[in-house]
Length: 151
Image (tube, rainbow, N blue to C red; front, side):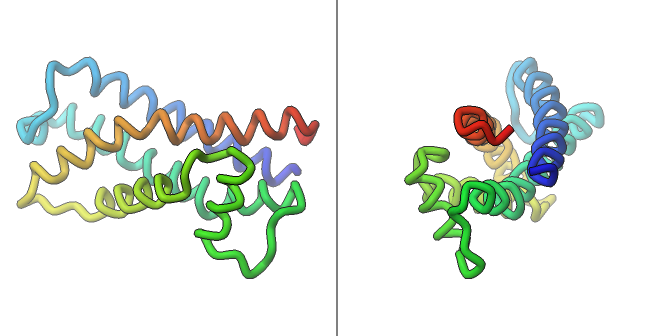
């Protein structure tokens, strides 16, 4: 249980910093390829992308498995799709396919293609849109733990 709490604390750190970057980005009048001409905006975008990726990694590769293990639902041979299916049945996530979509978006953001700034901008916009859903998944895990007295 200590390991799970440690991971949740790290996730909250990334979440808090990503949220600060999102709020700053949302305060801009618009997002287009022109943001790459402003170094301060680039730093904010880089912060958001880095934290978005870390959130996805920590949740998908660590938290989901540890959570399922703690409630007796994890098996060593479970694939990510099996894990997502189990989380969906527990109503932690609404749809396993959505997480896979978030994962594809995350992968897209890890590959920086300077020649295709418009594609990067679209990825950032979409990431900001789904950011709240990722936060909701964490809240669902914490609520589940609380209801089951796992905290």
